[in-house]
Image (cartoon, one colour):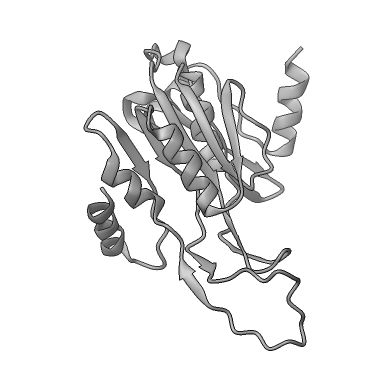
Length: 219
C-alpha cells in the first residue's frame, strides 16, 4: 500500500500533510483558490517548490473552462554553433502553474524553453530554444487564449551576427549585442479586454519601483 512510501518520505525529511491540514495550507497560500506549494526538506537543504496542487475535491473549486498559455524555462541566443547567451531557469514554476491549471480543467498550452522536466499530464507542450521561437509560439497560442502566464526567462540580448564556426580561444573577441524582442510588451499591446496576462519581474536588490514601472509600461 501507500504507507511504506509515506514512511520512506518521512525518513527522507519530507513533511507530509493530509485532510484538513492540506485544505488549510491551500487557503493560507492563495486565498480562496486553494493553491498549495509543497516544499521538500532533504538532508538539511530546501529544494524549493516541487509541485503546485489544486485540491478540487477538498476545496470544492469550480472547474476552469478556459484556454491558458504558460511559458517556462530560459531561452538561448547563440554566439556560434555551440556557445550561447541565456538566462538560468529550471522551468519548475511554469510547469507547476501549467499542471495546476490543467488539474482545474483548463486547456493548457505550455511553451517550454530548454527544460528537462517531464511533460505535465493533460498539457500540450511546445518546445522552443530561442527568444524568437518563444515569441512565435506564445503569440500564436495567445490569440485564442483567455489567460497567458509568462513564467519563462527570455534572454535579454542576442548577437548582432552569429559566427558560422566555433569561436576559438586565441582569436580576438569583440561581441556586438542587441536587445531581443520584448515578448511581454507585445502581448500587452495586443491583448483583448477579456484576456488576462500574468508576468514576473526578477530585479536585483530592493528595486520595487522598477518592477512597478515595468507593470505600467507593458500592460
